[in-house]
Image (cartoon, rainbow, N blue to C red; front, side, top):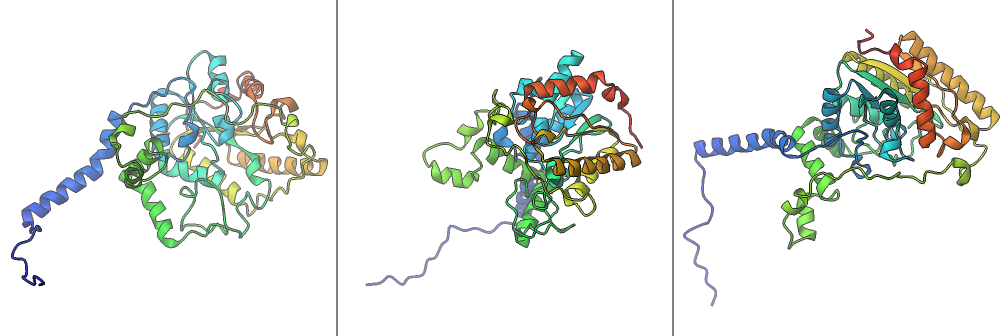
Length: 367
């Protein structure tokens, strides 16, 4: 016999207007205050030679915290991709380390970020680097990102790059960026809403990149507070790539790069935007071009590269931006086409200090 009696009670309940207002207030308070509270609770011990841990390279919320701390404790900030970060060296062998060693104090902060090609670097500086103001900034220009139409983002084939959340979502067209509109909107929200950036930080830094609800499903008997109690991962005291000269690897010895023209280059236009953003915030910018590993280029490709470098220098001169274009390092001091090894960073730091290039860029705005 089926019981068709309708229930006379329910577990649901109605909220009064005042209760709805209280719930809304509580939700907004959590949304606004949780990221601020976490900044106070989470220890960021960014001492000498600190660089963002390799596995947290997509944690822009943490990078923003690093930028804020570096701006408060250092007068010179190094900004750029993995050349600044130090792909082939340990934390104590980077460019910032050798600059600090030569000057005898912790003056230079390493804000390099792996894989931050100019289009991504512009987004990083614009949305997460607002604390870098009134400082002296050493900005690295890596010509590698101009070495072919593909890496210049000109080709129409779908992109498989890192940091797609940093590139323009709607304001300019990148042919290979095929993301759906809904996902583009989500990326815009992530970089403009602190709560979203904070939750992304938690997922990347503590839950291996998994969403917290997804992590709890995979670890049903573990408390989600346990990973949070471990604290931030520290940078590993190792090189991320094998620190041997490029001549001992399978990199082609006489490479023929398809260098792009600066006119119409997406990456070059993005680099110009990075310079503009930093200057607009009252920073003094010193651009370091390369030094690219010309030893691995065919003669015709080397000639084309040198023309490209002169074009970069001409723009910097026109804008009255201080720059240095160091001569290529000795061949055995490169790990690949653009990354120095430890001895290369030491030599580059010495050239910057003894050549007077750093003294020429004092901590005052250029315009």
